[in-house]
Image 1 (cartoon, helix red, strand yellow):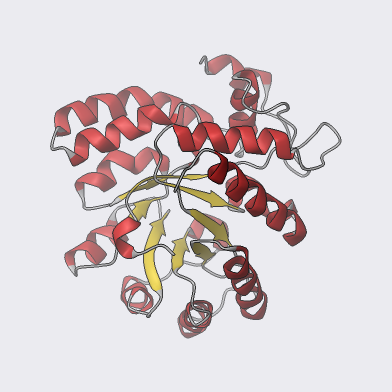
Image 2 (cartoon, rainbow, N blue to C red):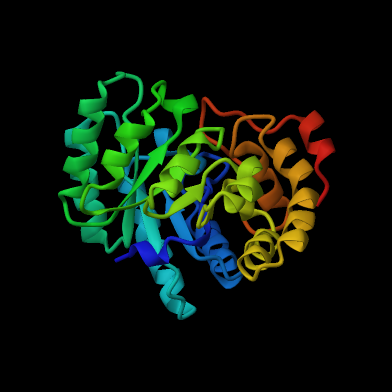
Length: 289
């Protein structure tokens, strides 16, 4: 199981490849996992938003986790697997968290409850219940998707729950992370790719970034240079990546990610499940590998 000390570096929220008829493409997934693991990344996240979690069934999640574990074992890789189990229903989240633990996941990613807009006390209890299962919990705060922003004071309380090992911060600013770091927080990973370097300078332990699926070595070099104290070189490399990152998210992810991975031959098809649509030709023209 993951420890706080292992929450660092580059974690990749993985895509879910589909065939042209929108069924799981496990051979493509296994090839993709192999490429990501061999790049040197620090962790994988299955069933996050990048993996089109709203349209993936739990049965399919189980197939993906098993396929990933088999693939990692075949290449003698110890890259940890985190599984997204968060929903806006605490009972469902707890049940999925138990199932992820039974599958051998190293940790779970639990998003702030979305859509039903609970009170902060309800949000705290949601995370407390998830953490009570016994598998390490990574909190995921992304107000743009959940419709609720957890206050800094409440997030401090949530981060102190036994079993919570860190935070994926996708708040689109540095305020939450800066204050948590000032107070000696558990590890925080950047969840908004455009803020990667800025969050490193403020104390982030790394990033959990969808864009790192494309040539992950480039993101690893930014992190490794920064960790080695070569901040100017890390910044130079980050600035080179920034236009690519911004273009990548001009349209809903993972449309452009899948297009590029298919173009690289890592997955067989860029197919998505509705309501997501393929990347536009205009966007494709902006990004050259």
